[in-house]
Amino acid sequence: MATGPENGLKRIVWKRIKETIIEDCRKSEVWKILILDHFTTRLLSSCCKMSDLMSEKITIVEDLYKIREPVLEMKAIYFMTPTAQSVDAFIADFKPKPKYKSAYVYFTDYCPDDLFHNMKLYCAKYIRICKEINMSFMPHEAQVFTCDNPRAFQSIYSPNSQDRKKTLETLADQLVTLCATLDEYPGVRYKKDANMEYAKTLAELVDNKLSRYYEMDDSNKKKEKTQAQLLIVERGFDPVSPILHELTYQAMAYDLIDIQNATYKYKSKDGSEKQALLNEDDMLWVKLRHKHIAEVSEQIPKMVKEISASKKQPDGKITISNLAQMMKKMPSFRKQLTQKTVHLQLAEDCMVHFSNNVEKLCKAEQDLAVGSDVDGIKVKDPMRTLLPVLLYPYSTYDKIRAVLLYIFSVNGTTDENLNKLIQHVKIEDEREVILNWKELGVPIITSPSFFSRKPTRRDRSQEETYNLSRWTPAIKDVMEDAVENKLDPREWPYQSECPTAWNGSGAVSARQKHKSSTQDERRTGSRLIIFVIGGICYSEMRCAYEVTQTVKSCQVIIGSSHILTPSSLLDDIKALSKRPMETFTIEEKSND
Image (tube, rainbow, N blue to C red):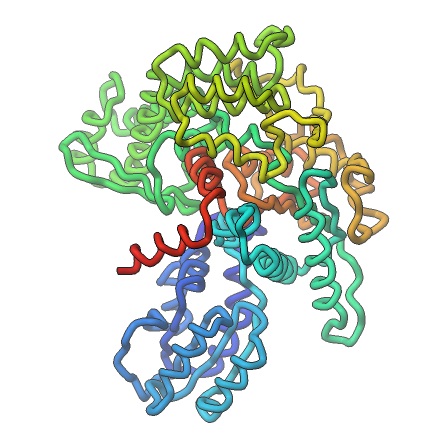
């Protein structure tokens, strides 16, 4: 099972699966087959290992959509999404001839009546159990979830979208299953903004679906609201955080290194290809992921030296090749060193990028984002801050990020000025990557009809920060204000009221320092759930942990349809102009 906090999302999900699917089947001593579709495969992989399943008498895990040999003496557990594709594949396993002795069927969410009737019609005599377990979200980390749907960005924000309403409905259903899994019935609030209308729409959908879900509990009593708040906000609320070069370890690695599916691929000194999973099974990753790269670069060699000293290794400069030699000589602590070698390599990779270009970029980016320089002096002419970036031979991609930060800093620019910037960066054919931000409600061209007021930020001038990491994601202000009961109801209207005692007792300033304790030891208190329409970035994920660590009385959980990197967000923004037919043509080609 994935290592993580005792009350982390992954453990909660695995516990729920054990209490429903596994518990039902435990009554039978027979070894069973577990059959999963694409979503449930990823869901189970995120929260348990094959050894966990083996210990529950599940001997084989199969793909629902692949051709499988019949095993008539075995019982099959089907864990799948309630879609026509999944149900058709299930029916094919029993019609005309059964592949298994019997079926235990579990859906992630509500199964539509027509699909349920089809199953009954063809497979009724083989189905022993059919349940909906309400779990259609993905636990990404201990305090982070996604709806596993990057396409939601296009569906919601493309002016040519044909499935916006359906996508928002699906996201609302997934949020309800998150609340059900956490056993929370939260009060729902949303960020009010004249240029962003989808937060209100989603808040209404979620609140209505929650009230229907909790209409009656098992004892036929209406469930009361729990000590939880759900805040819904749109990506356009803070366009700066996902575009800045972030210098904390996880965010920096995902921005600068090509990490796919949490897998870091690298070459060892002997030239062989290696890969490592960056997840919560790696406790060193959990310990380092939110630290500044300066601290990470300092700490990893120290850790390696400690191990070396314990094995009477001579002191010296720690390099990858030295480590390789030590590992060959001492198999007993090879495993211990492997983790540290991976992070030494990853930190080195990040620092190479930092030294080459990122360090110079960061000063300009931070000044534009924060609106003042390192000494706290206000940036009076943001164009003077931007020009050196445009004149230096940075990549086009980095220049686009800087131009966007300039436009965000001045709250939109003139048509003439924007055209000059686009020509300067030589992106005349790709101007959509800048212009399409308007679809998110972010002012790009100033106009009398498009009024946007910058949110008031918390004063963090007394907080210790690195000079190149002065920006704090706007969502952290929201988290701290919510926990301290300071969110303005005019800006954050209630879709449904929270309990009167919401965190009133036990609420402490989110800026106070507390004695640190491991997350595993923390109490079960109130919860703040934040959902960002349009994707979250790694720096925003970090904020959820930081606020939770500071405020022991409240656990902050953050989620979205998917997780963003600067490059994936810019690709998504650019694609918003595509017509539905263009997207369809691309999909057709990729399926050939």
